[in-house]
Image (cartoon, rainbow, N blue to C red; front, side):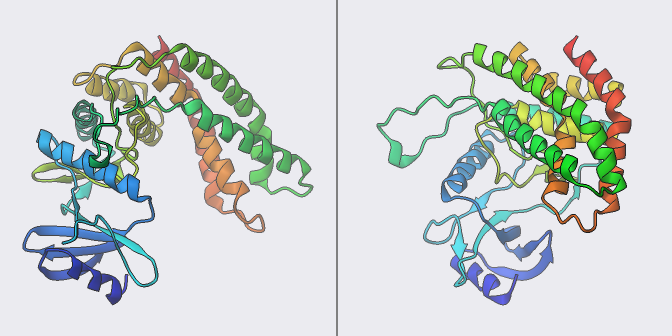
Length: 332
């Protein structure tokens, strides 16, 4: 960020004592504590939703999370003369959640369950007064993964037509068919379950963080502090639970004992209903890690393929047996 961006802070009702760089943004020491000023590329509607979600959390008083600050005129973002938008939020100095610490990860799971319990609400907007709030339907992940399947098939065709292949491309082409077959079967089963699950009016509704992973769970002496709610959305709790659980299991080579302990920690605060458990099973069953590897490869230059690609593919294949074992336990 440049000095022009820092000058935008004058639009806020704050007194900046000092600024410093941090986490791809500007950290501001103020009389109100530490704030973070960062670029924002999302929609204004998303910002308004984020503000309501964070205000609701603050009112509940159970979880420490960031808070959006408005300008003197009440705007949630400011724009420089080049059209770049910025937002200002509260911030805690702290470290990321330690993924190697079993107890800390279980605590992060319990915190997530508490977050979901607090976010069982439907926001309202002033300009919608008198207009019935529509029933917000649960996000259907099978649609997203159908798109992933098409991308995998496109990459497979490309690999088959490529005459001279690197070792990574040879290895990838050799394993894609089984994964793609599995992905297609999972999507078909998933759609049948989603179609049979009717979201009734009045069913408990929950927002999710949208990007609940250890990077966004900060630890300090005072406890955990949740940040980066820019992706919060109406998708139900399993989106968050799946993301964190998958990340932690990949880091532990899909250790079944650890996976069961993490899930039990979440359910000690907020038990899963049968549909949510099925939802979690199918999200974890989909070979998303392979899709990410393929997507990165297919959309990058082919003249030089990073060695990291091969390492990620090897690790994925090494973990496949353990992943399948955990899925069997989850479905039992």
